[in-house]
Every structure is written in C-alpha cells, then in structure tokens.
Image (cartoon, rainbow, N blue to C red):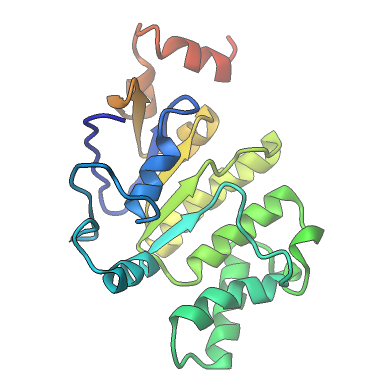
Length: 228
C-alpha cells in the first residue's frame, strides 16, 4: 500500500475490495492496532493510534470489534465460554446474571441460541463464523472490522452471513469495514465500495459506480465473480 486515504463514516458499511496480496487485511490490522504502519496518520474514534499509550490502545480496542477470517474461537471452550471470555476479561465487576444475559442476547442476534453448550468442533463453518461475530458483538463495539467474512463458505451460507452483517449494522448501529474479494458480499453489504488497485484506492462509490468502467484492472475482477 502506498499513499492510501480512507474515511469511514458513522453508520455505514464500507467494503474494501482488492485482489489477494494487495494489503486489505493488513489495513484493518493497522486500524485495530494489531500492526503498526511504517508511516502515515491513523485516527480511530478520534484517537491517533500511533500516539496513544498501550493502556489507551487496549481501551480503544474494546470499542472495535474484529471478526477474524478463521473465526478465532478457542477450541477447548464451549460456545458459552468463548462468549464469556471477552466479558470477564474486559468488564471488571460484571455479574453472572449480566454475563448470562449478554451471552443469550448475542446468540439470539446471530440465530444460534441452541449451540450455547456445544464445542466449536461440533459447529459448521458458517456457525463458527456466526459465533465469532457474536463474540465480537458482546462488547457492543462502535466499529466492526470483518476480514473475509464469507471465505471458505458455500453460496447459501455466504448469503446468510451477508444478511447477518446487515442485521448487525441495523441492530447495533455499528460502522463497519468489510474486507473481501467476494463481489456478492460487496454488493449485498456495502453502502460504499473502495477498490484497492496497485497499492492505492483508485475507485470509490456505490457498487455500480465502481464497476461502471472500462479499466482493464477492474473488468476481469467483475467477470470472474459474475460470469456473463
């Protein structure tokens, strides 16, 4: 990436599109403070993440939900324990009743209340993805970062995950950055699309605006996803 400039507006789903290896996932890891940029200015929720202390960064991360590509569930814990973990770690003094309410609420939000006592190994790929999103939601983040949310899923499950992303936006009033190379995901979830080409955001706008072009770097990308 070189000389990129990107803004996320309140309440929007922003999709970042690009080929593999263009730096899409690196971008959201920098935004969440998991990686440090070599240079540049990164402001998240009013704070320059290059200038804040480790403690301030930890507090900021609580306000940012990161949905990892592989769901990042703890295989040795039940679904309930996976969801309880971030609450116990970050909400000092929280009661068992409050934890139970929060766990039941996010499981209901992702439509998987019945899995509460199951192990991650007993879940399908789509269910694991949903539980990963639920674990992120349990701290009520202001910003959601989704890293390839439909990767490795069948087409029907992809549609369900896309619908869930939209439901999360509406119910939790989140602003989201969705990293993907799946154009169906982009079209279904994106209020705005930013396309990363040759290390820079070359095209931004609605889905139709981004792909209304004769740019030879864009056309094959579209044709691969939507065979005419």
